[in-house]
Structures are given as C-alpha cells and as structure tokens.
Length: 64
Image (cartoon, rainbow, N blue to C red; front, side, top):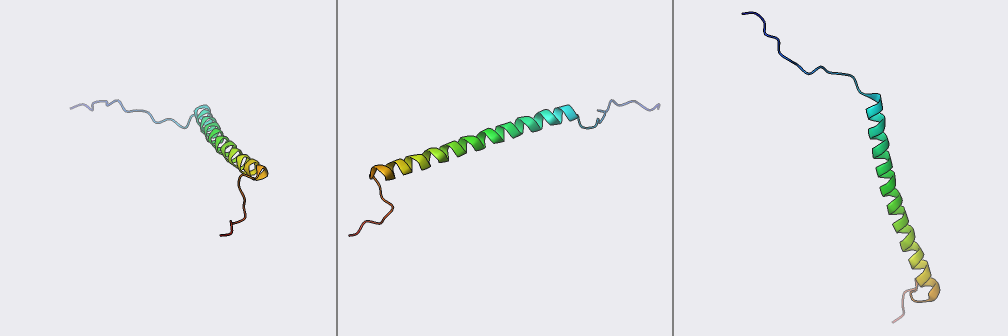
C-alpha cells in the first residue's frame, strides 16, 4: 500500500491587513455606541437642568 496523499489545509500566519481592518471596524463600532450613550446622558442631564431652572422640579424634599 503506497501512502495516500490527504489534502490538508495549510496553516498560514495572521493577515496583518485583515486584522487591522477588523480592529478598526470593532473600534469604530464600540466608539459609536459609546458616543450614542454619552449623547443620551447629556440629553437627560440637560432636560433635568431645564426643568430645574423653570421651577417644575426641585431637589429639595417637599415638607409635609
């Protein structure tokens, strides 16, 4: 029996360009989500101070 050749996948090293693109994409996605979260928090804070300035809410507990 002669040795049969089996086709194996050849392992190659990491593709630098592919890893850079994946890293850049993940970084931009995470940064975009963080900015959206930050903008939402700014909007809530701005709304709170607007209500406080108009006198519709107070930070002092109401006396009973």
